[in-house]
Amino acid sequence: MKEEIRSKLWRICKNTPVRSPLVIVPGNEPNFLDLNEYFSSTFSQYFLELGSGWGEVALELAKKQPETGFLAMERKWNRLAQTDEKARELDLKNLIFSGINFQWFIDDIFEPEQFHTVLLNFPDPWPKKKHHKNRAINPIFLKSIYRILKPGGRFLFATDHGGYFRWSIRELRKSSLFRYENREWSNERPGFPISKFETEKRKEGKNIYYLERIKV
Ligand SMILES: C[S@@+](CC[C@H](N)C(=O)[O-])C[C@H]1O[C@@H](n2cnc3c(N)ncnc32)[C@H](O)[C@@H]1O
Image: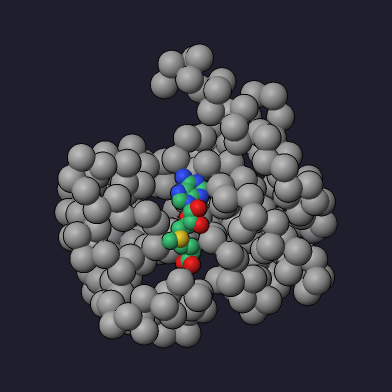
């Protein structure tokens, strides 16, 4: 990425207007974030959700797993603000937020092997062929996820878009960075929280495709 573009994109991320003790305030330059500055205690493991939307999944998981530190990244400020408000109402001590665009700066802001799980639920499917280049799942992104996961860490993915599902399976088959256990994909993910977005898609009769991969 050209330096000029990089600075411009960073300015966009940096200007998140959501101000809260739970929302990471980026510095002037992209640099490794010290998550412990934002969490009030240290945790045995850390979980990252990319594109957390209105935050239902992150909030639910954080309630259920108080021993895990959760970081939810969402670029839409109103969604981030609403999730932050709910986390504070619930007095959750293990959930923090970032408005940084995960497709721009993931390699710059996270140290290697920081997370035991990375979740990407229903990323934008970019259905038109000319826009496929914008899809989050691509070799560079998979390498970034690999880098930030601990050995044996998990990458969880869900989509309701058949084309994006097949695209993701193909990209993952090409990559030697991840393996799967038992099933390559599933239409079920029992016991996992379900967002309003997912509920709507299910009501519309859409198939939901879940993938789970383990860092090799
Ligand atoms: C279809 S919604 C799904 C939200 C949530 N994961 C769920 O399951 O309900 C996709 C979300 O990802 C966010 N998003 C997409 N690309 C992003 C990026 N590069 N960085 C941060 N957030 C992103 C969008 O703003 C949107 O809120």
